[in-house]
Image (cartoon, rainbow, N blue to C red; front, side):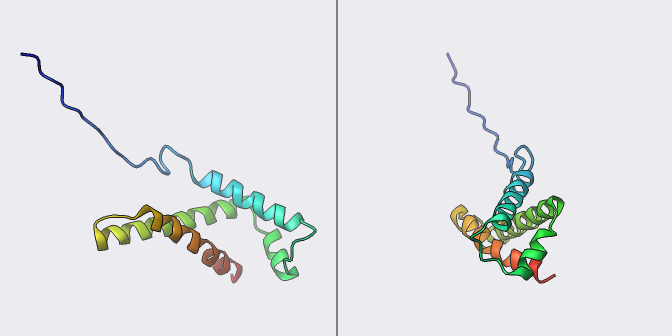
Length: 108
């Protein structure tokens, strides 16, 4: 008698392990900040412009890590509360978290 092999599957999270996420985030934050600071039509106040000009690439890299931690906490809390995660809510949370983190950084 011929037997059919059982399907075996392994799932694991690769975000941040196999997929580098902090460098692309830092690259984009650095690029967007430089572009805004160099724009002739940008309405950035001189106070914000001065602060933003002093932010190094390494600080943007660190900021990307903070942003990721905020999203990870949301996921953990969601799993603890609901035993599942609505990934659309995670994306929405990350989008809402970004200006809050930027404002917090600006106040330092």
